Length: 52
Image (tube, rainbow, N blue to C red; front, side, top):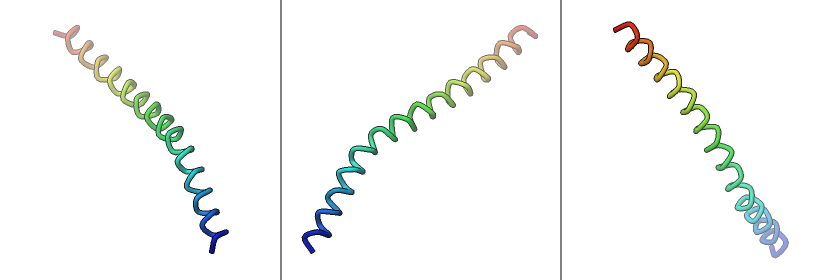
């Protein structure tokens, strides 16, 4: 039972170490996608303004 607990603690430590890194990567990806979307929207608006 003790060994099982140690294994779980080890996995938990590993997870809590990995999660911040993963969320940082995920956030960077989301920001990148948002920036691309924003660029597209701005380009559209810019084109509409030129047409007017």
